[in-house]
Image (cartoon, rainbow, N blue to C red; front, top):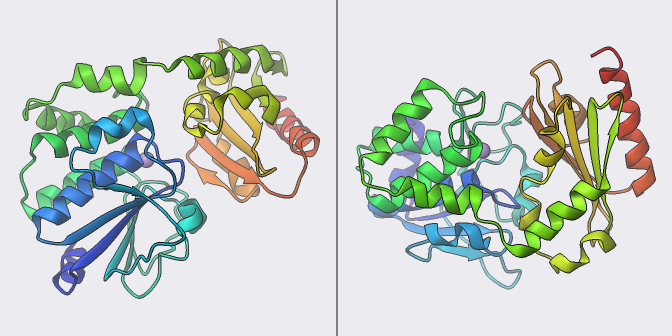
Length: 321
Ligand SMILES: [Mn+2]
């Protein structure tokens, strides 16, 4: 953190970059970092790969979030990638992230240290939790908007302080954030409960297309383009769909594989036991993640090839599980 402080001394303009398909941790931690750096007198831009998902728009009180455009210039003294395990997760913005003053602040164990400065804390539940520590380090107090952003970040990655990555520290930090008077019932309702109708339809299709394999230990949801044409590009609705598979009783590994409009196959995986490390399979395929949550994108294989690959792989690891 001292190095970060040093590099800020010579910097005026800073661009913050959350990962593609930004979730609550990516957006919450980016906004909180943005607010912190603004308080420290810096010029801040937070550049997303895609439009802000509706469900997180309430966090952007200062209209700090902008969507990447190929026509725009992105010159800054420092570039900070947040919650981003590898450079590919910056999507269309990979070329922005350049120069000698790039920072990679993250909590993913698979993070490959792609920046000139890397601050990785794999004991943190979320990147939001790391940003909280930056506030402490710079001795900047929390206002409500910063507290809401960090709470959303921690809450997203810990499933509302319920997942195994929840630590006593996560809970203490959330208690501190609660002191600012944030409305956690409202945030929780927006982040976890409220469902747009189209997402409900997507869930229905996902359940219909789910098949169990290996005596019900693997649940695999397959979706082709035509199965979800009604979403009309609202890719953010895929957030959490894989959990339908993994939350089915008896399932040890849940997988969602879907075709995208550009012809790629996206694979999301969840495991319900630390004995099955889905990050291994993700890494083998050029992706990344955690033991219980990982994924990859396959560019040059067709749907059936990826399907067979998944079935074969999980057959080997679930055969004796
Ligand atoms: Mn995260």
